[in-house]
Amino acid sequence: MKFTSVFDIIGPVMIGPSSSHTAGAARIGRVARDLFGRKPKWAKIHLYGSFAETFKGHGTDVAVVGGLLDFDTFDERIKTAFEHAKNEGLAFDIIPETANKEHPNTARIVMGDETGEMSVEGISIGGGKIEISEVNGFKLRLTGGMPAILVVHDDRAGCIANVANCLAMHHVNIGHMEVSRIERGQTALMVIEVDQNIDNRIIQQISLIPNITKVSKINN
Amino acid sequence: MDVLFHNVRELVELAEKENKLISDIMIEQEMNMSGRSREEIFTQMDRNLVVMEQAVERGLNGVQSVSGLTGGDAVLLQNYIASGKSLSGDLLLDAVSKAVATNEVNAAMGTICATPTAGSAGVVPGTLFAVKNKLNPTREQMIRFLFTSGAFGFVVANNAFISGAAGGCQAEVGSAAGMAAAAIVEMAGGTPAQCSEAFAITLKNMLGLVCDPVAGLVEVPCVKRNAMGAANAMVAADMALAGITSRIPCDEVIGAMFRIGQTMHPSLKETARGGLAATPTGKALAAKIFGSAVEVD
Image 1: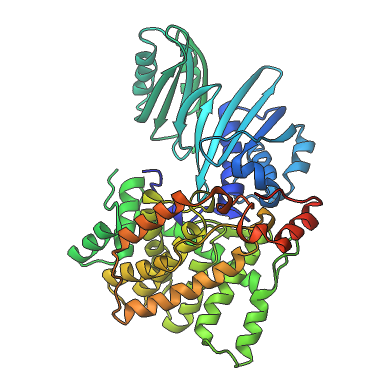
Image 2: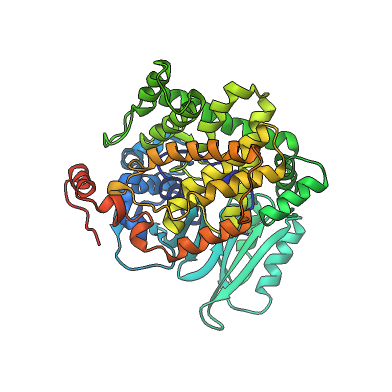
């Protein structure tokens, strides 16, 4: 089931005018920032399908930028997000694309700073609900509705078990997990949805496990 | 984590078997799924209700969107009701004006609660605050109105769609109107089965509704579609309470809506490339607002 809560239907509380194009867009931006782990210095925001066609009137552009600044869907500052971005030193480009994506409301955010870059693709599935469909080229399905961690690692035996053990030691229950790799023996990705927010100590510990390259989290 | 119902049939059967209201079943399911207490869930829904109340109030005082395409119609309707000359009845027009009020606030980038979406955010609160004056519900009953609406929206969202981009306006204002109709029936003392009939009757009459916003803005025709969604919900609720049933079962109506949405041309699904958006005036308005013509299929 894509929609699991009554508050997916009656809600979110948000700045208008469009739950798909404004609230969903803000959430994609915010989850992207969460995954990046800090405020990016720059962002290239690619908009596809209906997002690309109608972003100006829906404030999709300001909403994504607001999300990147960590604003929630009901944050009044969304309306003036461009000014806030300027003040906070976030440079951004809005790039409407003509290519067709699987879902009509898709945004791909490529962001970075002096220490790293990340690419996050999200889709807005209606009523303000979103899914993250791709991170750094890895296809995945992440709802953003549950706390989650993303672990980039080398594709080696025992890696997945080590991460699961570390979570078990801290009594973190795994709700849903996906593992994928682009090529055998190369870089792989674990997407782990968990029942509670994970604190930074645990993230730190996971990042010290052998063959782990990067750990990102989404709190809820 | 336990889902109690997947479709309207299961929802109504559960309510009937346990002699409960639709809202009870939705509340129990939410408790199961989220692990949160009844009190926490009620508190969150109460907050949503407050946002709806404030949006209606703000809209009834008059707002204008940035584009200038919408705003002020809720005030015109209230003045008309006050003149005592209304033909279709004060309660119906009150619902319509409050739906319009909410959507005018939405178009003006104000704060609203999506029900189920922002573009369709007027119908549920519009009807709720109108029937409130007639039925004098308790605060709890008003909150339950939102849970009942949510139960039907939950089924539609998981079995079809609720966004205009995915399924046209039938998925958006159509779902909202059906949700409102079902909730009105429960508040008026109707049975769970009558709630489902009201939903089916409403959605049947919204089938095929395209999403064709002028200039891609959630304004024209969205605001007036919320008005008609509210009116549709009120009439369907009365029909169901009168004992009228839908010949096509509720879940099959939702299935029909899904298939219609799937076969709808992309130009009619929120791309601003067809329908009213593609009329000469629609294109001229888009050019005026954005300084250049919007390309139309």
